[in-house]
Length: 87
Image (cartoon, rainbow, N blue to C red; front, top):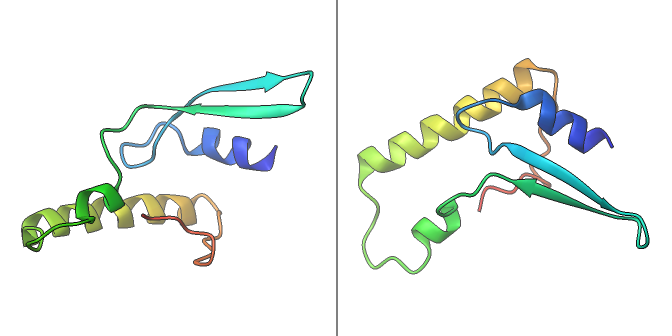
């Protein structure tokens, strides 16, 4: 599939979650994508906070996010904001 090829093309990159394995269940025809384990995502980090994040931490997250987007664009991938899942 196109999406699997794209994810593999982007690996390894320090700011993009790596695809470890693709599993295919022949009886059902379903694919399972196994990604590296993450401690949390951005949504988990900001959800339910009583106080704002430290500005330096926000700067670091934004830097990482933009580096990964720049890599995607430089490799010829188009970014559709309607399908971009950040949180």
